Amino acid sequence: RDDEAIGLPTLFPGMRTVHAWIPLSAMGTEWGTLQYLLGSHQQSHSWVQRTLAALWGWEFMWFMTSPKVQDDNLDLGDIAWHDGWTLHSAGANSAGFVRHGLAVSFAYCPQAGGCGGAEGRRSSTDVTCRAADTLFDEGWRARHRRGEEDYAKTYLGDSFSVRAGRFLLRSAFGAVAGFVVHAAFVRVTSPTAKAKAA
Image (cartoon, rainbow, N blue to C red; front, top):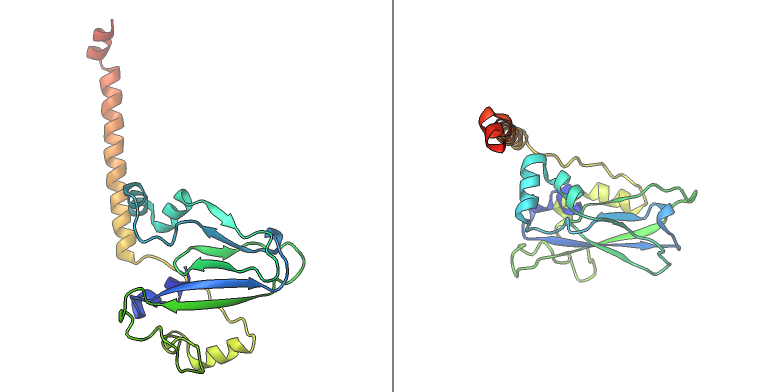
């Protein structure tokens, strides 16, 4: 989830992004092309999804309810698009060759004025989004443009209060489920139930 990893929802809540990955040669899944959890970009969820997320976390819910797909049979000139909220990763590269491609990101604001102009160009000659100045320092952008692959992995974890609340909810859910199973077992195996069956 690129948007979450760089802090976009916190810094610019109204902004969204779309990302393009453009292969510079033909490649299939053995090259470690991108894989996605379909639907993980959605902001609304069913009651089943919300329950799973409340008990075990959003990542668990997405892995349980979202099919995983992977780009395959990409040719030079193809473009693989994904929303900035989509959970995705590169697969293992077993092809024995370096996977070369271009990554291009586009920022937009679905509601007029909702991003305070941060989604706009720096100037008429520089298409860099104004938000990039806040999200990435100038030194990092310069090194990145020279080809440095300085991508720090960002752990997207829940706060202690969310984890503690989830633990308490799971504990209460387990206690109620255990009580229901116990009550049903006692009812079925009690002498009264056996006498009625006879």
